Length: 115
Length: 111
Image (tube, rainbow over all chains, first blue to last red):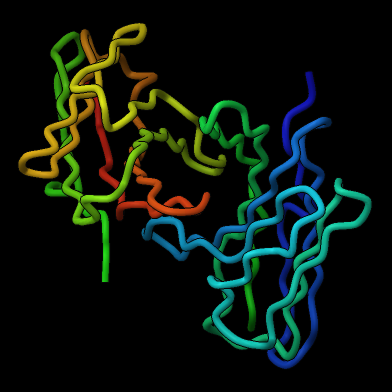
C-alpha cells in the first residue's frame, strides 16, 4: 500500500518568507509526527498528533513553527518568517498505536533551504 | 538532559563480514528501543525494535542486543552487503510517545 508522502520534496525560500510543508500519513494511522533533520545530524522531534487529543508541541523550536492536522489525516507544518537556521530536511512519520508498540513509518522528507 | 548517542560516527566493513553498530542511552526509564536505517535522500526505515524486558531480538540478518546494566544498545548485521550501506540511528522511547534519536552511524560496505 501507499506509504507516507510529503510535499514538496524540495523547497527553496527567501529569508523572512512563510512556508507550508504537507504530510499525507498512511491511511488508518492515528499518530503523526514531525521531525527535523539538519545536515549530518540526527532527528529532532518537533510535534506529535494522536487522534483527537491535543498535540504535543514540546519540540517546536520557536513560535514561528506551527502545525495542524485536519480531519485526523493530512498535516501541514508552517514556518513563519523563515530564518537560515531553519534549513533542514523536515520528516513526517505516522503510526498505528497497538499494544504500546509504535512502529513509525517515515516519509521521504521535504528539504527546505532558506537563502 | 536525557540523550541517546553513538560511539562511532563511521564504520567501514568488508562485504560479507559482520557489522556491529553501537549506541549508548542515558534514560534508564526508556522501555522501547528502535533501530532505523536511512539511505541517502530517503526517510528513516524501521529495521528492528526491542522492549526493555528483553536482552536480545533477532530478525533477518539483524540482531539487536540490549544491555540495561550499562545502558547500551547494539545492532549486529550478519554477512553485510553493499545494500546495507546507510546511516543507522538508534532511538529510545520513554514516557509518552516521543522518540529520542541518536546522532547516527554511517556504515560503508567495501566490495
